[in-house]
Figure 1 (cartoon, helix red, strand yellow):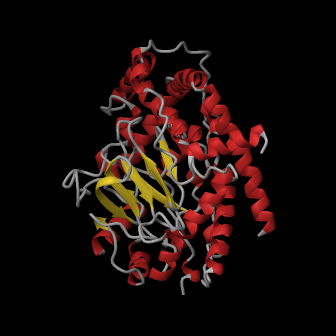
Figure 2 (cartoon, one colour; figure 1 turned 90 degrees about the vertical axis):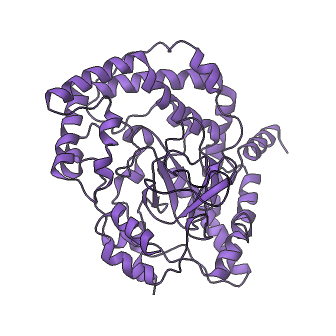
Length: 147
Length: 295
């Protein structure tokens, strides 16, 4: 969890302080081989939501992540995810083909909350990062509403 | 049921609300064997704002997605209420912020970097987010998650609502065919002889400024950038040079024309299916407005 938190801070920049607050309220989740309902974007090594997986609830590059728990375990997530199930109930997941920034440089694919799609093969699997945002276009939520 | 509504329904079923991506992809193999399509007039582009590739007609635009997903949320909330939960997607005013412009632009407006001002401010990074924007929204409790999406993530209120929406002809995401044409056209453009010529000119321009990259994507995907929270001075300088070389050689204009040609070829080859998509988008907007008005 702390590892993921760190990654979020990395991806969002300056989120570190706030992130630690958010995380206290967040049960351990996600990571290689596991996907958590409600929050995770679940990336699969194989199409049709099969094979090894990786659950990731944050905006970040896929760089350095490795699939676990099935066919493709140990393979890099970056450029290798064949299907994705966005299990986050509030946020859309934007899968981009560049790692820096949330712009759809080249092309991208948006997965609404609780939706699935195969990513292969039109961009040669070059999925590089994900960005989570709400339907109004704003990336996170309102901490005031958290209580 | 009228013929039209039956067709819409069949299409909606075929497209699927939750399982939108599996079927009917454009055929990469057949297409790659074909000669590059003829390119029409090449526009001189200084900004991508307001530019739309031909496929945009068949893609959900950000405002359309927001309306459809908003209506879907109202239905899920009603389903949750019926099950005794007090669950809301509305997180207050600050969650409705649109300060991250990237998420309100069309894909056509984002795919080629020529905004020198953004490059000078943020390099290849996105504008920094406010504290509220950085916060994760509250997680559903275990009981809420169960009611929302069932044990395996494929059931619950979302599945119930999506089945109803599908029945009414609503799509919640771009169908696989559209996604494939969008990404496939970009992929093919990277190998297109006219783009290779344009990239050669761009690369030479970058070389003159001291940067060694073969293509603009190589520059924006430099691993040094993604490792940093915000743009370094070097990243900013690179991105500025990048946009200058893009504009100096009209790379975006050429790219737009080349991608348009690939998209048009795919649109012609899949015209009937895409017309059904266009109708499904119209239907989705109408139904979403009805649901929102009733909620």
